[in-house]
Each structure stands twice: as structure tokens, then as C-alpha cells.
Image (tube, rainbow, N blue to C red; front, side):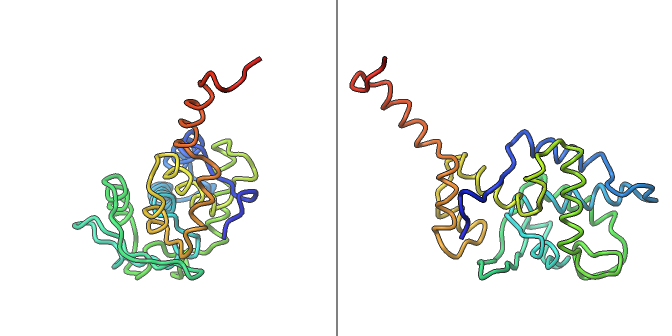
Length: 204
């Protein structure tokens, strides 16, 4: 279960800067094919953010888990979380199509390493740190798992139903979801503005 004191998440502005850097800058110097890495990494980070995926869960994704025609993605989750089939948004489909067009070989993994194995946690954490520096992300937020915390927080900011958030990111326990309402709670903010405008509340 997440602890509010340890949760780090990206603001909307930070995430926009991160995606901009991923789309335009290659973390590998002297790469013979920067377009390959741009398209792969943008797909990785967008899917991880939108669906609240851990690094290991990104590695488990297979090509057959993606149905571009129906706009669906099948997710297997770790740590007793709940997986399933989820809908994808048009930009996810577009970016995945671009990646699959660029992707080489017939490897069953959606994001294989150069050795043909699933992309590793170490590689994803390295990418997050490299991109994070270029996007001016605070050092304590340059961890791949921050993407999962970010989507949970952003869904809460959008006043999304807690049960939807729980189902969307695969939380087995609703308490793991509730913690994000302690970080940001628009309903609470609106109520506070209304209450403290009351003449019953003393002002100096």
C-alpha cells in the first residue's frame, strides 16, 4: 500500500515537458537510428503513464496484447494487482502504430531489448533519469514508478470515481487508491472555498 509521505508524482507541466523531450531527444549518444528510439520510448512512457504500469509490466507486454483495430490492450500486472483488457485512446493507438512500423524482427515482446529479452527495469529507470534531467524534472521524481503515481493523481484531480481508478490501475485494495485523494481532492477544495466564505468563519 502506498504511503502518502513517499508518493512522488509529475505535475501536468512536468509530464508535458517529459513527453516533449522523449519525442525529440535521444538518450543514447551516437545512436545510428534515433527515430527508432524516439518512437519506442514515446510509446513506452505513454502506455506506462496512461495505464499505470510498473517497469516489469511494460516488459511483459507482447505484440499480441495489442489490438489496434479494436483499440484494446491486454495487461498482466505484478504484485497481486489485477490485470485485464483496457481501452486505448486515439493518441496511444497512433503512437503504437508508429512504433510497430519502426520495430524490427518478429520478437513476441512489444518492447524487446537488443538481446531480444523484455526491456529491463534497469533500462527503463536509466531512460527516466536521462530524460528527467533534460526535462528539468526534480531528481526525486526521476524514477519510472512515478508514472503510475502520476496517472493515479491526475485521475483523482479529474474527480474520477475511486472505483474506476482502482480498476484502471489494478489496485487489489481500495485503500491503495484512496491515498491519492489525500494528495489532491478537488471536491474537498471546492467545499473548503464554500465553507470558508461563510460569515460563520472568523476572519481577522
